[in-house]
Amino acid sequence: MSLDKKTIPADVQVDDKLAAEIGRRISPDGRLSCAEAFAAARAAEASPAAVGGAADAMGIRLGRCQLGLFGYPGRAKGWTSVVAELPVQAGFEDALRSLPPSPSCPEIWNLADASGVSRLQAGYLADRLGLKVGRCPLGAF
Image (cartoon, rainbow, N blue to C red; front, side, top):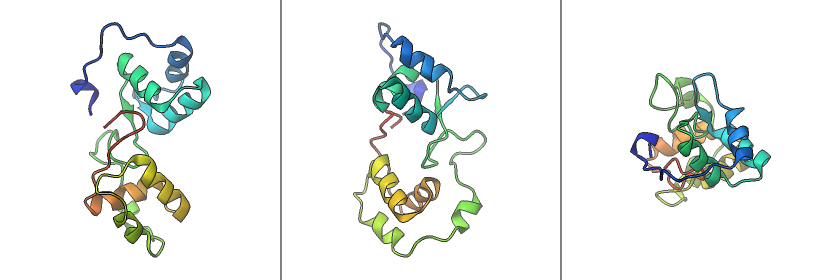
């Protein structure tokens, strides 16, 4: 869900250590990339959901989704025609089809990582197959 559509309680307190980790990872365009959000979670010993909530409370938008689903300035999705043209390990699309109709990000990541497919390409293929990714660990959707 877009930051614009979220209701952030006025009394939300962001842990100083977490805020510092997020702050040092913000890109020049003012966003916190998905990969950097997970790095902030590890460094601050916090959950990805805590990082997502803290970023929301700080008014920081998430960007560069590892599956390419949002946060790429100038285009709706992260992939380009180059991603579409990359070879895919035999059986990978069938493996994607075996996932639930609304798989979580980690379900797709795990499948991609185990198959040697980039997460961005896995996101492209999941989108092309009509899968509606849900349950983002950062709370983006």
